[in-house]
Image (cartoon, rainbow, N blue to C red):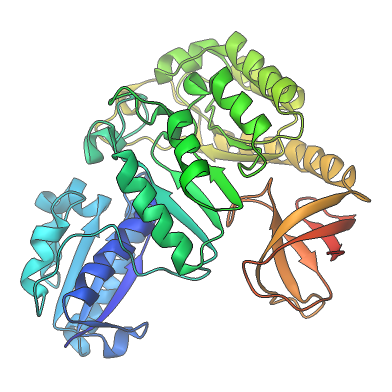
Length: 426
């Protein structure tokens, strides 16, 4: 029996892959450890979406490699997107790595490490908090955004069979999950390769499971249908939360990005959401400094941010990725200009966020308790239905006694730029 340690990098979708890798090894006869110093096998599950993720992957591989040469580790394994994308080019540069596992062949690559036979399974070694878990409903992406490498790494979109998803969802509920977050590269595209829809899947989840909160993330604006909006408006168990990365608002930039719909319909989309689901929280993200973005295109985006009044917002400077169409485009704004624009937009968004949150003071909201707070001034940290874990705001609670995963009603008594303060009333 070997001791296994996992270093998991990247997004929630990658975290799920890492948890499945651990389950394979544990069910194959090994045990887990968080201490790399005593691990016999160390796995680095990597991301390669942008340059910074690639750099983090390399740094982590080198760091873990020190345990291969100067510690107990006898096997260093690199899995995930970085391995899938670069293993043929970089394998010789990392002699300390024993095995390179891609996103599709990791079960085959890791099978020689098993002490006993182990069947592939949707089951995972869940990270805390168990009460909030992601469930991946598809793999790959069939869009061809000019800046994105995901299709070249993970292939075209492949929806999972509904009953497989339901089976995993039921297992997660049995394990203690109460907030189910369904994810994919494009969650809203689900089923289109199989003659089904995301609405069909959500209705199955509502009928066949008992999750009090179901959250969607990573929706493509082209596939946020009226049917989906009406389902969210009418079903209290589906969080009225729309995470829709729009990337830009200027038509020339959107066309260059190979993104649809264009500006006019994106304005309409925001209005459709607000009109159909008045209580909705909308999160979006944008790329600044994309090739061809002048002050004119940037100012269009500023106007749109002020119009949309997004509840949550993320902005990122353009990252030119080898192998993408956007990597060849010119002219490209200077990196310092892109960063300055990011900072300016987030200043605008900070004021919008604070105004929206201050308007909630005095209202009652359902919240989920995430954890005991590290801040000595508060007892617990929680979230509303309008806040996803890790990326959105926190509700700070200063009294009471709760188990993580408890869903309670709280009265909002204060607000900051991105966070709320509340007292539980029931």
